Length: 351
Ligand SMILES: [Zn+2]
Picture 1 (spheres, helix red, strand yellow):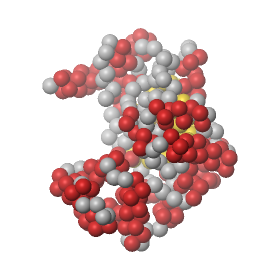
Picture 2 (picture 1 turned 120 degrees about the horizontal axis):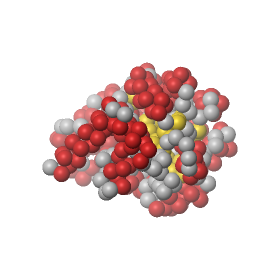
Picture 3 (picture 1 turned 90 degrees about the vertical axis):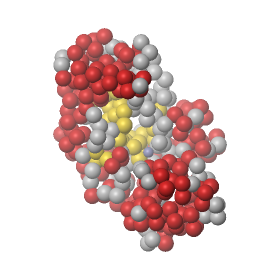
């Protein structure tokens, strides 16, 4: 009930500031802020097989960016964080895109130039450097070809673990949102090395070509150069997109610092800011923060909704995840400071 009331209040506040000039009053009352949007892909043939929550249509994104750009100033993430510290001026917004997909170059670059906003892209280094993709893409590729049920059966056949323990049967029996649930189980509950081995072997048996999949899905070195020349920020996102909290300190350092080194040395990327892979609070820990700071990043972003102000922690910057279902009135309420005003009295309407 409490949750329902909160959601109702959230809708009312957001609609009020979106449809009336009340947003101006909130903007004046709330501290200067930076709202960072986070997505992955703009819908394009190259990312057809990825799930809908990783994609946004050009029209939807252009409407969101246009609304924000008419009221606030669009910046790159690291610049925005620095500018917050300087004080004064309009509030800020940034668009960030994770992983480094090809559509960011082919579809997002012209859109961003049309709207007139810079973008920050967080790059995994392995797709660029070794033409290899992380397990999630092979998983989605297999789900598209085999269906989740058949994939589950083959997965259970491939492992020596009892099916009950790997939860395959349980996950399949639940029936709803099965792909999402299974991806979550693979992400957190399975041994990462064993998971990668099994996914790889099914992927290969199905005729999957990792380098070809990588080339189709991810941008190449020329794409990175084109974005850098357009004035975009290119940040770090590890080598291979592991859940950092599941790794020891040494392995985290290799992923975070190693990824940054490759991007800077071989691709001339600036790497001022960093995005924790998956980005939920439980996906990284204090070691990840330390490692990111030691590696030389100025700030780091996660994926819990909220606004950043000058008192925010530089290594826990909030971001609003966007896909084609993104609600502009909610983003508007965060961007104009309405949600920040509620947060200051102890009520978080962002999530
Ligand atoms: Zn990512």
